[in-house]
Image 1: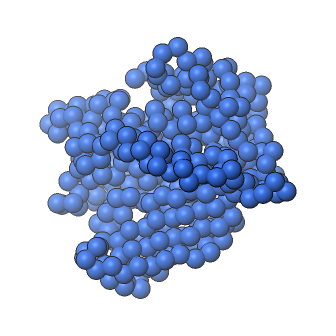
Image 2: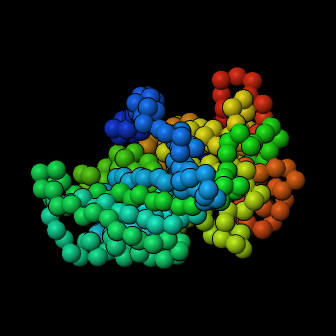
Length: 352
């Protein structure tokens, strides 16, 4: 990493861009406390994981897993580039990746689109991406809501939110408590920023005031910065399912590396008392992240707290199954292993 290049804005952080990760974490603790009283015996896993797990009944061998999220301010980049046909892919794939950590595959998807005025062309572009991603995943685009709310949204503003439900067989539910010291961590590459960190990106390049930087070529490539920022969020379903369509049995845990980076997301899928030892030198940071860091003078720790840095998903597997996964999943690599936790840190980042 090479933060703090001469002539850049010194030491930009996500908080400077209006996103306080620490405050958000504290708020989520309060939300979890308030929601706890609503959870009945059918809830097997609620807040804290990536998706909520519901047991529909003792006689059912099928569990339901749900999740919801938004595209976030990546929408601002889509607006500046005048291209909205990939934003739907982003939210579908993000939601799919959030139910995969329970071992679930998608069943159906719902969308919410809020905008200031009805725009048939815009909606058609968004739905193009939604339907393409759902088709690729074998997931029904069951319905949703389009809300025209002038006064809440202004000008070209719109929001896109997704809600997904998937299924997993009871005996294939992936649980953090099944992980142990010595388990191996395998990385899967991201396709770009996915759907996190765009508020900081907009601050770094001054996109809201002048979007011309999006037309500049990403250094060392023939790709415009705006095009690189709009590359869709990758779905890891094709990478992780077996011939039956279920998540592979070798998978003991999956950390979807979204907001908060490895420090927030990997601990969510490992047992208490364990820490993830991750070698940040085991992969090369892609040019897009390097360019963002140099341009904003962002330090290494902040980069890894905000962005996926090229590591989109972390697989936890046993030592005996590691080689099988590494040999059969193209593009995967060894990033570390689980160890006994000896201090407060649940992620031990080597090379930071």
